Amino acid sequence: MIPWILSAAAQQEYMEARKPERDIMKYPDYALPQDSDTDQAGPKADELPTCLLCVCLTGSVYCEDVSPEMSSVPALPKETTYLYARFNKITKLRNRDFADMATLKVIDLTGNLIADIEDGAFSKLLNLEELTLTDNKLTKLPILPNKLVSFNANFNKLKTQGVKATAFKKLTRLTYLYLGNNELTAVPQLPESLHVAHLHNNKISTITDETFCKGNTSHYIRRNLDQVRLDGNPLKLSQHPNSFICLQHLPVGWN
Image 1 (tube, rainbow, N blue to C red):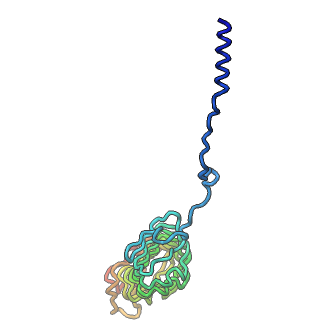
Image 2: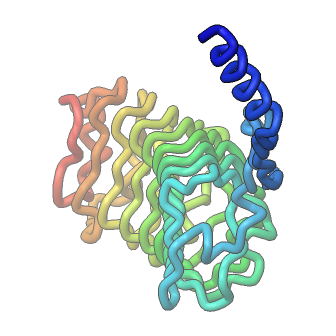
Image 3: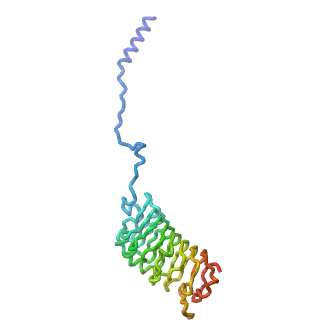
């Protein structure tokens, strides 16, 4: 019995010795990113074609809450008429941003971080009718296009010294002016074409007989201006009865 066991053990040892070594599969290196590579930044917004980053339709460009973050106005197709670049991280408007965009009629830059606009940024926009800069960080305004019909700069930090006295006076087509929730201490000169003037929630503490009317005549009637908001200012309207004598509707405010 013992010799048989020894013989079986020897045979098992012999068979083990003859087994081929198990092949180790070696997979090719596909250079998959390691953890240390995940911190590398992806492409920036200004490195991507505009119509890949935004939605471009015939004459319209929509850049709404773009990812990766958009910090400047992208290069626009030549035929762009409407630009909606809301809720991004644009900080500045430069002269070259709209230099060759004479076709633009509407620009909406609501909800960005714009704190500075170069004075000639809109000078080539001869057909611009609607400009919306709501909810930015502006303290002053540049020269605005002459054909503007609607200008909205609600919820900025505009100061009287940053708005030229004639900034709106020369805009003979301006119909809607929205300057609420700023830091203005005086009402700017308003064009005769204006229908709506929202100046609520500023720091306006005084007005004169010529702010809205012509103090040297009681026959003048301002027929177009039918909506004025002055609520939320440190101004008591009842102390300035002659300031609204030409208006067909009294301003909204504290009496």
